[in-house]
Amino acid sequence: NVPAAIAKVSKMGYKFVEPYGYKDGKFYGMEPAAFKALLEADKMYMLSSLVDQDAPDSANYEETMAWWDACIDAHIAGGATFIVTPSMGRSAFESLEGLKTYCDYFNEVGAKCNAKGIRFGYHNHSSEFTTKLDSTIVIYDYMLQNTDPAKVMFEMDLSWAVKGGANPVD
Image 1: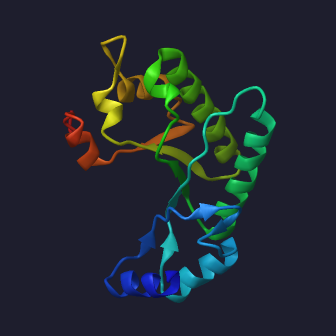
Image 2: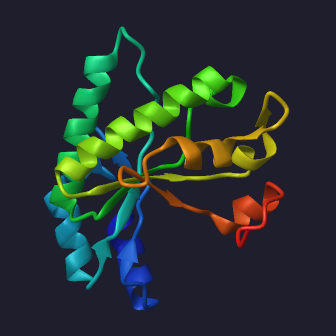
């Protein structure tokens, strides 16, 4: 019951949400403008939203990029400032080539977002700190070094970073 949940968190004093409910151009089954209106009725807004979309291969590149165009437009209509992805495909954790593919992909998605006035980012979990490629490359560090900060921001989940053995302050 999304309307009831929104009303409850609003009454708790929250001013914004970061939903993980975007699918098929809608937020929890609602058109972006309707979801925005629901939030506004409870004096809230959508600061960011979590979405998943694996890196494309040559066979589905155009389809994936068209998905992002629609996703970005929906988030703008919903009032979001950020779109954040909380995952990467298995290939990013298995090889340097796979991780590089994701960094390049994120740079491209970030450029698409920037062009429409919204920011793109990545949300970590513990595996970006615990999985090491070539026994020395920390995935999170590699991502920071191989994404353009003008295109990709990082939403560091402090709890997951600590669980992964990292010191978020460092």
